[in-house]
Structure formats: structure tokens, C-alpha cells
Length: 51
Image (cartoon, rainbow, N blue to C red; front, side, top):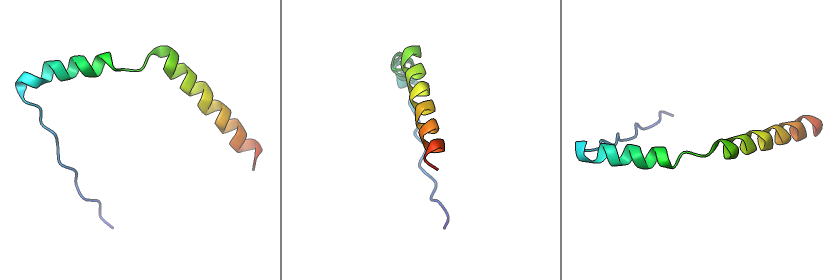
């Protein structure tokens, strides 16, 4: 099976700055990323012990 190519989204030059500002303001905080990393480590420990 061959995957279909997805259409590329092209932003107009007037939308680029607002898009970049919105994107950068919505990045997850450092605390959130650390909590996700810790949660992932907990699940990896559970997977290893349940085998």
C-alpha cells in the first residue's frame, strides 16, 4: 500500500507573522514537558515489569 501525499499548506505573506506568533505563544511550558517525560518513564517501567 502506498500512502497518498498530503496537500501542503501555504500561508500568505500577510499571515506568516501572526501564525508564528500564535504558534510560539502556544508552545508547552518546560514544567509540562518535564511532567510528560516523568509520566512516560513511569509507563515504561510498568511495561517492563508486566512482561
